[in-house]
Image (cartoon, rainbow, N blue to C red; front, side, top):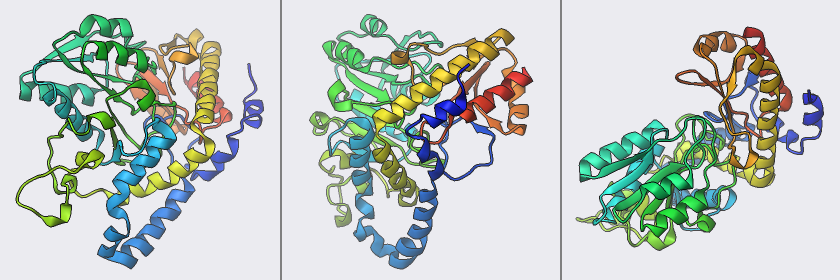
Length: 397
């Protein structure tokens, strides 16, 4: 078995662990659900409250707050999403942004009445599309995906045709960690004339993303997982520049108006990605993102991905030696090119182990019916921490 201390000693990203607030956990293995806070985030929050909020009060809006959805969006696009400036905004929740973009997409293809999605996508994606289909009289075309894998281009090719307005899938499957072939699926969907939309919640900040190069039309993701934005941190939306004059999002609020402070009698959308905004930006909730983008830019997304693959490979090594003999099944891709940032383990009765795991200071993620997700965050998780956590799980089994 590989020595975890040797792996940590050889890890070029190991010094970044010291930049995170200590949690007291023996092994935190749920970075794919909620990232740990940075020490710099605590300092930024304190400074923002005492200096910017208390010191400037309403004047802070003209000091730059109003532009944060766009400036942070541009930074996020450049550092983690492969998106040129002017296409990403930070605002709202993942659910709200999926609704905005999906509604805009199907309305922009009025002669097409079908939306393609898969049965194992994250619930909010499916629920939102079900609601839009009911609103607009659309037909949902469901692709049955293997929960141990994810969506394949061949499945998409069989499902799309001249009646398809939109396809929506996840870049990294939330259960298995399957990494989809975005570029090829986009090519297939575009050949049929459909728009493509991607959920990046389980990849942003962990897996390199190339939205522009892959030809993505629309994308949405959260900032509280690998981007360490904190509980309920705002999401982000990407709208390809070539579509910005064509798509019109349905929640028309004053921040998306071409001149918000004119307070005019009718809605006139702003140009570009600003038109995706609706209400007042959640400025306080955006503060942590400044700190994490600084760290992510310094570490580099390619090095983060390399560390992520090393961590999940180590999870697989420990699982094969310690857990598989105890009846545990690995239900995530073993091929690195098809694996996202987490590993899912399956065994009947895992739900009963959650409380004893937590009582032991080991915090994985659980997904029904019987899956434990092991999600080490590359910048904050050590190999020794993975070793400690899975050792406790082995003992409990």
